[in-house]
Amino acid sequence: MAGELTLCTRGTNKFYTAAISQLEFQFLELTDVKRVHIKKIVATAKTQNKWSNKAYNRHLRHISALLAELMVWEKIEHNPECRIKNLPEEFSTANIPENAVFCCRNRTRTGDLIVMSHPSYHLLYPAIYRL
Image (cartoon, rainbow, N blue to C red; front, side, top):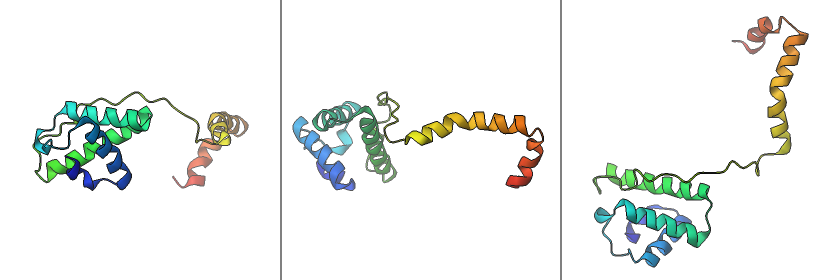
């Protein structure tokens, strides 16, 4: 199975190859892969690489895309990853600048002030934005 994953990028291939080796799935035929094998491979890769739930879900989608492509090329008959549920993700504002969050909160308040100050604004809006 490890030989079939050469479609991946080098880093992704390294994650899966290490997990497959640890689980001793190297000699498992691609046609014999079941959902439990995919779950074990991704779970092992998650613990080895200390992935977050978001990274786990991203890699799970990547495997799903690979298996879907193998279905298109008729290498496998069904996608064994099809019903593996994603892990819950936490919303993070780590990469969002503070001023962007501030703008989003004040956008509706600014719109309300414009409408209160200029009651005919709704008539000018289509003309301004060419709607």
